[in-house]
Length: 178
Ligand SMILES: NC(=O)c1ccc[n+]([C@@H]2O[C@H](COP(=O)([O-])OP(=O)(O)OC[C@H]3O[C@@H](n4cnc5c(N)ncnc54)[C@H](OP(=O)(O)O)[C@@H]3O)[C@@H](O)[C@H]2O)c1
Image (cartoon, rainbow, N blue to C red; front, side, top):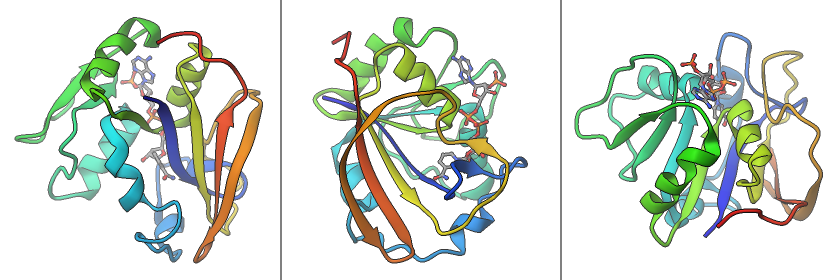
C-alpha cells in the first residue's frame, strides 16, 4: 500500500496557469494506453485525494464524475456534490485524517491528484511515497506549483510517452507511519 502523487506538469514545474487553465496541457499528445499512462495507473488506486481547486476544475470540465473510488476533497468551503459520487469533504491535519483515507483504500493505493500544496502536506506528514510526473514540452512562467518545498527524490524510471517525458520517483525518506 503506497501513496502516489501522479500528475502532469509544465517543464518549469507548474500544474496549471495562475487562473487554473490546463489548455496548454491538452494541446499535447499523450497515449493513454502507453508507458506510465493513466489507464494502467488507476487500476492500483483504491481512493483519490484532491484539493478544492482540483475538485472544482473537474466539476467545471466534466459532465459526469468518472471515478468509482471514494474521493477525499480537502476544503474549507461548501461545495457541490455530483449525484452518485462518493465524495468526502475534509479539512485540516493530514496525519489525523490519513487513517480514514487509508481504510477507504482497502488493499489498494492512494492517489493524490493535486495540487502541489496538498501533496507537500502529505510529504511533511511522512505519508507520501512516490511521485509520477508527465512533463509537457512547454513552460508557463508562473502558475500553480508542482511541489513547493525542498524535497529529495530518488529517480526510479523515465520514459517517453509521445510529447511527454514521464518520470517516476520515490521520496528519499523512510515512511514514518503505517
Ligand atoms: N497538471 C495536472 O495534471 C494537474 C493535476 C492536478 C491538478 N491540476 C490543476 O492544478 C491546480 C491546482 O490548484 P492548487 O494548487 O490551488 O491546489 P488544490 O490542492 O487543488 O487546491 C488548493 C485548496 O485546497 C484546500 N486545501 C488544501 N489543503 C487543505 C487542508 N489541509 N485542509 C483544508 N483545505 C485544504 C484549500 O481550499 P479552501 O480554499 O477551500 O480552504 C486550498 O485553497 C488546479 O487548477 C487543478 O485543476 C493539474
